[in-house]
Length: 318
Image (cartoon, rainbow, N blue to C red):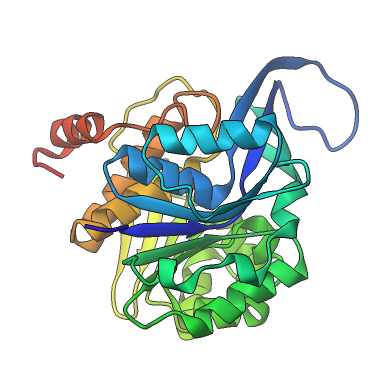
């Protein structure tokens, strides 16, 4: 079958500190600490592999214990690591502060990610995939590598893109070379406001005008004047959908990686030729699994778990 999805983005170890509240200034105590493999595209590919999708990854780790842990974590779920480069630098890491209200602050130390070169990217390897999933890398040079890659890959490969807050801050015009080649653009409500300067529905239309086919915005119930059940908003050139959650209130581990989990569920549906609404519900459901545990990956479901929960909630197979 070959590889269905290839990811390209940062590989990090997440140092996650649970706190009572995110402070703008001041002092507070740490409630708990979790060390977890991370990186946006890496989390999404991990989630897809756990659902039985054949997956590979392009990225870099350091020649250290953290790098070996990241490679092992991928191999445990069957992600092909043959194109991940080992660099003579510390593996990338993040400092994540997360509170019980679901708010978080993330600071990135790129490490080995910043040493990735264009020569490290094997175009023939990418050409076997149905989907290339991109997320942000720190630094102008690495963004340029991703932009240039868009000109080299064949039209048969669908691109999905999760710019995150680092890239969203650059604005639509700077990201246009990637967005115009993107099939599915994944953002949360804050990122699309940062990217476009508009609220999520108008912002989605601006993104569509820049050439992407589908915009998926995770909302988390943040719509003024409406019940707190809206999970995400999907828009295409001629349709829009509001996906509502059917998951009842549950214990929150943290929200680190929830957007990456949503992308995994959505892309799983896309690869299995589900319609757009079903893709949205699958994304929402995988995200709900994710936030029950601390860290970006511990709560991600197996295919059996996803199928059972989907059938329970929606009365049909996924």
